[in-house]
Structure formats: C-alpha cells, structure tokens
Length: 539
Ligand code: GLC
Ligand code: CA
Image 1 (tube, rainbow, N blue to C red):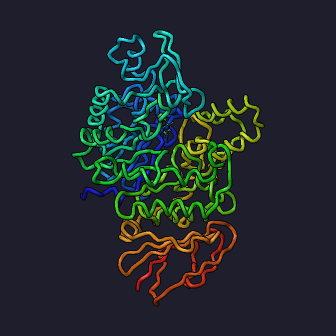
Image 2 (image 1 turned 90 degrees about the vertical axis):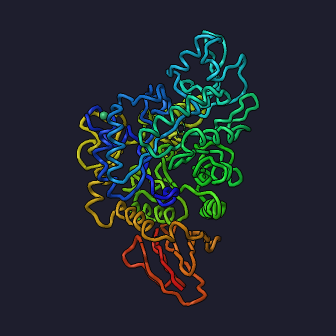
Image 3 (image 1 turned 120 degrees about the vertical axis):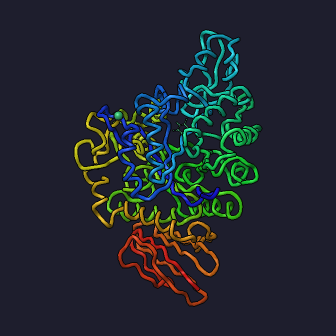
C-alpha cells in the first residue's frame, strides 16, 4: 500500500447517532454500523469517517467530549469499537476518527479540575480572563462565560459547555498527542480534525482562525503522532482560502493531507452575512470557486471533494430538485463532484438521494445551533416564517434525520422510538428500494466509485474548465497524455445546449450518464433536465 492511498480512496461519513440502532433505544450505535458494513462495502468506498463516539454529555452530539479514552455508552463499548475496526479492516475498509481538540466538554475531568481553583494544575489547559471582550461564539452570544467559583471568564468558541483548550500550553499538547497515539495504536487510519484552524486562536486580539502559531502546533502534532505512520488526515477549515490552504497541505510542510474548504458551500448566502440569510446560487460563481480550488492544487497539495456533511443541508434539496427531478439531479450533482480531482466524501444517505426534512415546527430541529439562532432572531423581531424558511433550507438537522433503510416503521432505523424525527418521505426514499432498482441513485454512486478505481484519469488527470460563461451547464475536462474525460452537467431542469469545440477527430466513449441514451455528438449536445455525462476521449 503506497503512502498516498488516500488519493485513490472514497470516504463514507457516518453520523453514528442517526445511522443504525441495533438495540432498540432509538439511538444509532457501533453494532448498528457493524451490521451495515456489507452495505458500505457494496457501495465500494475504502474509508469510513466516524463522527465522534467518545464519552460526551451530547450537548453538541458528541463534539463535546468528556473523555477521549472512552466510548459513549450510547454507542456501545470499547470492545464494540475494536470489533468495528477489525471487521471493517477484514472488508478492506479503513476507519478514520473525528479529532475534536479545539475544545472539550465542560464535563471533562481537565475542566472540572481547572475550574476549581486558579492554582489547579489544569487551570492553564483552558483560557481564563478577568474581563470578557467582544468575541462571539460560533453558536451565538458571547464567547465568554463567567465562572462563579474563581470569578473569571473562560473562553468557548462554541457553546458554553464546550470550553476552548489552550494550545499555547505544551503540557496540554502532550496530552493530546498521547491520546491520538492511543487511537492510532488501536488500528485507526487517521483523523478528520474538527475546526482545526481554530487551534491558534488569540482571543485578546480577536483572532479565531489561522492564528500565528497554528502551523507550529500542526507540525508538532505531525511529528509526535501520525507522521511516522501511513495515515490519512483531513482538517476542517472554515477559514481556508486558496492562499493559506497550502500551508496545511503541501507535503514538504509535514502537516495534513488535505482540508475541507467551505468557500463553495457559502455561495448561497448573502455576502458577509450568516448562512441563514439566503441567496440563490449562481452557477458561474460555483464554477469559479471550484475551479480555483482545482487549480490551486494542480501541482502540490490535494483537494477534498464534498457537497454534504453533518453540518450541511442535503445537496439535492439545496442545489438540485428534490421533487420532480430528485433522482436525476442527485446523480448530476454526484457526477459533477466525483469527476473532479481530489478525494470524494459521501455523507450517509447522500448515496440514495436523501432530502431535507421540511419539518414545520422548530421543536423538530433539536440542534443547538439552530435553537440558539431561532431564539436570537425571534427576539430581534425577525418574522417566524422567514426564520423557518432558513431552517428548512440550511439547518444542520436536515442532514441528521435517521438513515432511511426500509419502507417499514421508523424506516428500519430502530425498533424503538427514534431520538430524532424521521423524514416522512422514507417510504419513497430508502436503501431497500434503491438496491432493487438498477437505475437508482445508489448504483450511480457505486459506478462513480468503481470508475475512479478503474481509470487513472479520475485520479491524475489535470482539470480544465470549459465554457465558463455558460449559464446553465458546468463542463470540464480531465486530461492525461492523449486521453481525457469530458464531464458535462446540465445544472438545471431547463433543457440546455452545449457545444464542444474539438480540434482533432476523437474516439468518444460514454463512461456514465444519468440518461440511458445520451448522445455522443459532443459538438452539439442537446441536454435534457439535469443530464450529466462523463465521456472518455482518445486522440
Ligand atoms: C465542527 C463540527 C460541528 C461542531 C463544531 C464544534 O464544525 O463539524 O458539528 O458543532 O465543530 O465542535
Ligand atoms: Ca442504540
């Protein structure tokens, strides 16, 4: 196995709470994942990214960790975790875990000790000040909370139950390295690193992202933990730009393999405003942003490719059409993304075209971020119907409704009462149905993954955008020597014309399409609603 196996891999993200419940308590768990490994194998992915399963009071669904060395009882036991690693590995599937080290839970022993006294040996694991400044929490409100016992404020860039760790403290960093090595020794193959660009924060200067010492910490981490092992690392970086992303990912810097950048996922909000402030996506903006990221990593560094995760709404509801053209548009979006250069990530349910929830009541959206925003905006006098329109479009819970396995009660997710309401469309959209239908979204993803394995053009081909100004069609080439892939996607339900200016005569083959009878006449293509085709061209 080469050092860069992650360049040839496709990753499947699991949100354990909502994936599969094996014991009827309504909460997904590790044994549920083990039961579904054959399904994941059938899809063809090589890696599972497992969202946090550590001990946690679940204020932020496990992104508030109270013990890094324990598996939450909700999800099972350490031996279940060991079984999962072993059974996945037997199927040739690697596991990467979520590394949440910007903050802990306020129930973590370190914080419990730290808050007892200013002289606690753990005091300096966190960030304390006599006076708060204007810094805001990413979940709304001040980033500082007053702690009665010692009469100081502590920093939390997320909820007050998620105090920020002080990365300036070398002793604290040692503890993190130890913990990471513990999990690597258990046989996991790397980490997805939660809000990793926040580690270098300097609260007194109002710096959250990309602080001055961030890269020193990451280099130290690399050296002390995964650097000598054959792993995959991907950092979550909301603050990444094409200029600073190389600092994380260029091989010579010995930091991470890739980052999740979010520039493309922010094109449908009002500039400078919050994600809740909606705006239509402009396809040309999307082309510009994705192409810029493809170009920046043409030589050094590597892209992650994703539309979805547990923090983002469902892509088919967001930029596709989840009504009449659900299957066609889900396949188009998959094709557009998986044809690009980078490592594709699929979020659970995306592979069957799961949609946003469209619940009418705010009570059906338990997520802390959404709940806080709702209260804040109600108090500021926003009309409730506007708030709910944003929630239905953008809330993180749209991705967190339980996985739809079957048409039977509770979508086959649980025998008990599900912890979160199931999307009412589960009888229409579920795994069982997709597996029986050779034209399903599932088999389209399976084919995209297989093509990537069979055809090196997907991995190494250089990316070239075609016809940037076409308002409805996103088309690009991937070129390697005398061969190329041509990916043509009609992004909308309106028919569109695409014309390819070919210089020399070409041998043209269709590798994949979401219609049975797509044309090979690439000089003059009449594209139907959401039609998406991958051609292989040979000179
Ligand atoms: C990341 C996670 C998100 C979490 C936050 C705080 O953005 O993906 O789910 O709420 O960090 O840990
Ligand atoms: Ca369970």
